[in-house]
Length: 230
Image (tube, rainbow, N blue to C red; front, side):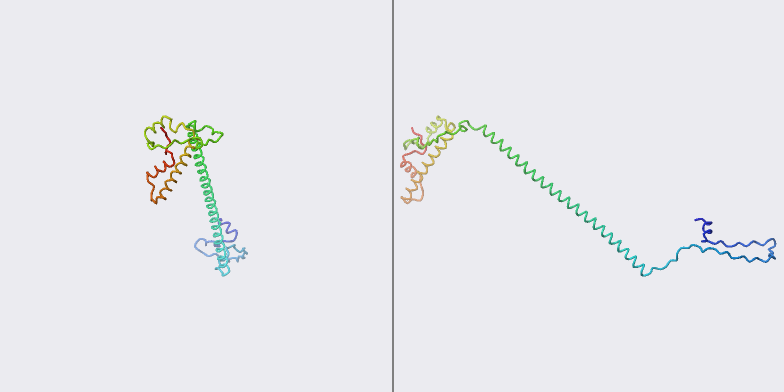
């Protein structure tokens, strides 16, 4: 604000300046006129500062407390939002890991299935035609149609017997059904031989079965162990 405006509002009052004495410093003989006092408006001033009263102190403390509570409330809301965000991220991470594990298991299962399919296809390509033929409509019991040759003491697993088996083609050209039936015949035959040998050693009160006991059991059965006659 300018000084003129302050004077106009009555905030500041300028002092009256008396006229200086003329030459020689002689005082004027004229009697000074009594000036009438002009009524001036009261200057506008700031309110007088008063010390804090107990009531104002309590209001300040209450305001500070409210500010503190509001700040704590905002901090609590921020913490809650942060915890909720972290919990959501953890849940999404667990869900992704679960989906990844399931997909991994599916891929492993598909891979094993494809490998097994390839193995079966490869085995089917390498299987002989004689084994893959359709089974006979009528069950063929080889035990009823094959007569075992008579036992000979000189017969056994000898080189001539092996040569005869090789000349006949071995087991490669025997059909699957005949092969299984032959195994069944040999199994029954061996069971009878073993039962006979065990009965003999129990009757003779022996502890173990010797090779000679097996030979005698074969003689009693009137069969050879392999059945390749001369």
